[in-house]
Image (cartoon, rainbow, N blue to C red; front, side, top):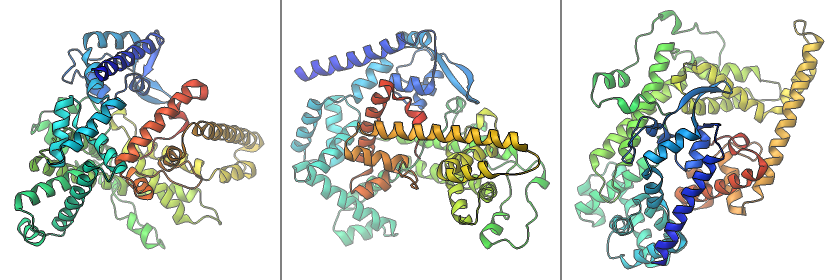
Length: 498
């Protein structure tokens, strides 16, 4: 009873804090990033609210388009957001109630899991979710963390045995063994083998990167319609065949020569490819969200896997058709003491990240965005080269005044970089050692290190990627709190990791 009272007070306090923060922003335009932080929802959720989607949404969230730092963005007024919340109060209360778990509730959930160890893991999760009214995902996260931190508990031992069984059966299935062969070899019944294979595949699709660039059109497309067929169909024919291929220069190394065998995409093909890639990720993410982990349907997993593989093929086509651009920019930064292929590798990584973040609906050419992303990465990873070039460049078309201006601009940039690094170092001191290590790995803050994925960090620190995600979320929350105290804005200080 006291637990319910504490939880209700916590939820009421959370919603009250949101209302206060909105009140303080009266008369100002709120960006999507800021509104996501204030309301505690994702950008995808905001996109759904704008189109009136969602079980608790009765009226859409009003927004307007503007240009900030050269990029088109949705912005919101505090008044419109308050009106939306008055018309749709459950959008904050219901999700927070289902996601919010106090420390006391977490202890009760783990105790209940130990009482239910006679059931399979998936059924334990389902039972506790039904009993507590929490989401399956939230219960899974809490129980996985408990099992990892308490391996000798009844639930921890069941978790380890079940996970080992699923991995053993899954690897056997991946090696092309049939269900019957696995059953005979390991002594499990065929229904158990089938369920284990589904759980193994389910774990695989949860690892898929299905983050997409939201587009209001996606939610309005009817499945199997002509409109959807147009989006998911093959690339349109090139408008000008002469643009597709460039004559191969002589004397190129094999890797560079191979790049010229890939046709360049025309503007129409490029837009089609980005729209198709993001739409397939959107569809796959919707199906994945609706899967019941306790009773996954094979047809749903099949569909997610198929859409993911299809969007991966489109993504690889976009990347391969733009590798020449990466090589060209890398050559611009080549010096006798720098390996050109290392520069090309760095440029390729920036290109891959740019493909993931590019919004085709804004009307810009991808080459423009990719050039900016690659150049920005070079400016961060080899700043000493820029310093050297800007101070010692001599030519006849710029003159002394231009060289002086370049030096001044470079000095200002280096000073800004130094201030940024000092701020990052200062706020990182608010974290404990493990949180600081994970943030350093995740955002590539150590000199010469690229940002790492959750799985890579988990392998390095010998914990699951889900545990890494939890610790990162807690650390980011601390960092935001520190910066709200006057240290700046989180997004400005750190680039978003892949």
